[in-house]
Length: 260
Image 1 (cartoon, rainbow, N blue to C red):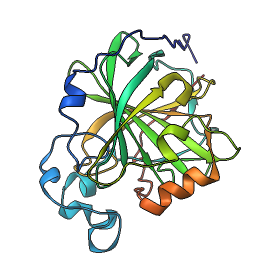
Image 2 (spheres, one colour; image 1 turned 180 degrees about the vertical axis):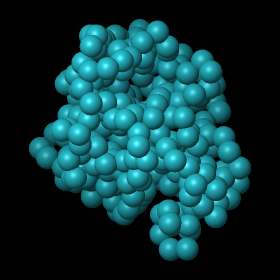
Image 3 (cartoon, helix red, strand yellow; image 1 turned 120 degrees about the vertical axis):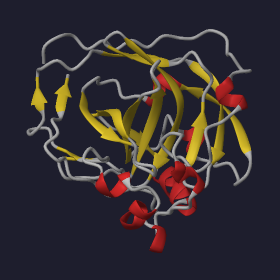
Image 4 (spheres, rainbow, N blue to C red; image 1 turned 30 degrees about the vertical axis):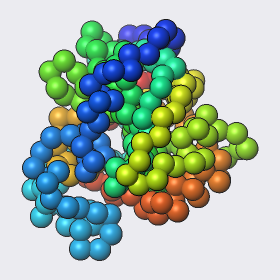
């Protein structure tokens, strides 16, 4: 595509521990972000409160035209165009890992961000789904992690990384090998750059939160290359959350770009 994709990973010295993200973690009922009336209403992934009924909790989940996740296809994605350059500025941090009732979420301190073109988006938190919510060329992965960032105007940019069940070692071991008990917070040291694939290729599309309130105008960046986790880590997560993924949603004429 036109332009160069920046792939910058910087070490951030020192940790701003007394920050708003850690003192005031994101609301427990939002796996992908915060605000919206749906946070005061219950929803689930099973039964009468499953994704098929989320429109009863938040109407946008049913009537929205730019919903996520979606099925991604390498050949169908447009190469080239005006997708803004993506650059990561992540470091090693002390983070808070918690069970928020719908997933395992990791809240991070300020100072870690991405830039899309000239816009900086601060990393707020990341969390996990099984199986993956996005599919690539028709195939889901065993898990997916979403890195949720907030821009200066309050809009969100979410980086998705599919996690495949391979190998004996995992960069996610400190997070997935032993999960925090419900209602507790686990302090964990996280090497954020190590959680990302080295290949910068990624899909770009406009979508929504993948949980109620399903708010739209979310910039999605889904990495093409997966990361490895161990079979034991996948099973540990599934023992807590057997299935916490929304089915893929119609594209409704949206354009998906593949930035390399």
